[in-house]
Picture (cartoon, helix red, strand yellow):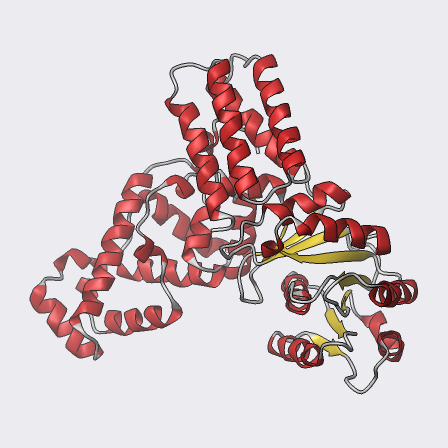
Amino acid sequence: MVLEKLGSSLKETLSKIAKSVFVDERLIDELVKDIQRALLHSDVNVKLVFELSKTIKERALKEKSNSAISQKENLVKIVYEELIKFLGGEGHKFEIKKKPFKIMLVGLFGNGKTTSAAKIGKYFSNRGNKVAVMQTDTWRPAAYHQLETLAKENQITFFGDKEIKSPLEIYKKFESKLEKYDIVIIDTAGRDALSGDLIKEIEELSEKIKPEEVLLVIAADVGQTAQKQAEQFHKSCGITGVVITKLDGTAKGGGALAASSATNAPIKFIGVGEKVDDIEEFNPKGFVGRILGMGDLEALLEKTKLAINEDKAEDLGKKFLKGDFNFLDLYEQLQTMSKMGPLNKIIDLIPGFGNMNIPKEMLNVQDDKLKKWKHIMQSMTKRELEDPELIDRNRIERIGQGAGVDIKDVRELLKQYRQSKKVMKMMKGQDPEKLMKKFAGKIKV
């Protein structure tokens, strides 16, 4: 999960509210201290933490809940709203009004600029845009080959010249070819620190390119130095937004998230994994909902649209909520969800599921395991596929021999089916909208 430690700390804080008999100043003080600890442990700047917690406390003591929601729900609502405000409020969507729409990436060495160029390129390509990426980094020898390879693997046009040593000359060489593209992403050179020569290089490029967006790429593991980086780059080249990478790892990440607050340059993208599709346009509402266990319906629907057609999604959704499915449906569900990304990440997007104690082994389904399970299912009879409860010890041995796998693999598939059935049973008959209200404390999102 993205920022797992911060998320678990904040969930524990909210559970205290749910368990409390009534809301008083003592509970509010305890809640504020818990939030402070959680954010400070995640490397958020001390000053920003105390400003946020002060606002939460003032609102909690001053505001009275209306008749529609209880005092406890109102307290959760305040925490939710202030965290959203802290991370950028409504968020900032890209508006592609001009073509080519040019995005220039800047940042220091090791923050994931080149990978982010490919990821952002694929993101826009998946949404029907004609995209090109350009490599102007003449400092890091591997940068050219890295972006060229990633672009080729993802059917994105690549521009670059490893023989030319001037970034400005590289851009000039391909400038006339850019008009036929909707979006062009320019990867620039980095340094170990923001030096005078780097500033000059970025300023010269920016002057020539005139990009619509200048995005600073910062890794989540840089800690509180992210704020200093953001301020320096903003002063030097007027960044319009931030891309945060490596938010899926063990990094605390709060420093990078808070960096945008310090510069008023909103977070535009977050990297949530190593694969080229593991990038999302940053939505503060959904992000806060995710770390609080309330889910992120917008991100879930976006991933679903890219992975499955609408009719199939509706059919699977009905079976999912009715708890009425067999082995074939289970396989189709897992295969579809695997296209959307790792199951443990998808679960975080479903309202309420982030708070469920779902076994980890149920979520860690890899592609090779899916292939093995497909062979096992092909060795089953029609009756066994439609009614998995028929499968006893003798049938397990026969199926294993037929599929050429160990019987423990057949048992593992059966275990996955039963765990899924159990989760579906918990969800049976539930209205997704009611679920959202139940787990989000009637917060409007």
